[in-house]
Length: 316
Image (cartoon, rainbow, N blue to C red; front, side, top):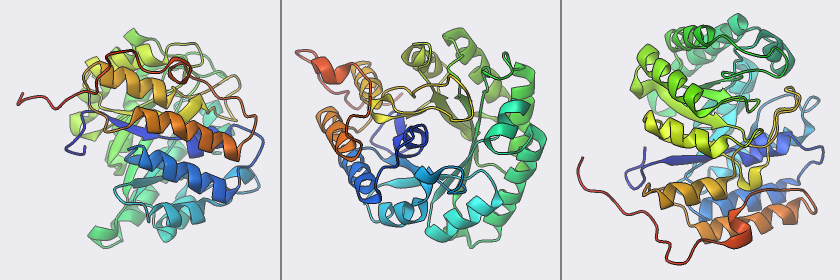
């Protein structure tokens, strides 16, 4: 966690947002958007996914996006990799952090990355083995987000015991950090608190990656507050609420970055992000995707009169 913030907001719009729409955003427009996000103060951005262009043509330029985004100062560049081949491409492009999405749902896992939960854990182990062959300073961090950790549109409820057992196996496989993903927007605040408490007990606080939340049923920000109460300090979000998994029917957008940042700052938690610059980045996004439907509340009304950004707190 950077010293100047209390909560890390990880922007996933260029990956999760763009994979969910049929149009392909031009590479130049993507880079303009990524630069606008970084200029607003985002310190971590997931710029794309190293998947087959045949399956997701929207992600075909991921190599170039990683290379160009690495030129931006003070930015951690993430890339999603579903398998060893994707990891090899990501490392060659210079990604400093890889995120892998094994699913707790067998059906979703087979549809999304072509692997059962057991096979996905084995794939994480192979990627971690590849990481360990590199010189220490060149090793990317391997982050894992367990997909459908709170429920699946294809299978319905997912066993919480299965999710926690899977987290333990992923830690043994060598993952640097492990988080929980509400891929289908099933989670409620009580479930969030219970699952992150169990996750911490299973793998330890230092290995918890964060929460990836969707707002499908309007529970996104409530779930953030619940996770904060369990000491989760990293949250994925997407500018304008773009997002959704093409292999999870009915899964709609991520929590809105602008609304999340405002809520956190209003709660006294520093994000290091300029809200006005973040709202302005919406126009950069729409310039690259004219007429695309994007969401959120803050951009319509602005911050309230008298709003102040969170300040550094004294020693705890």
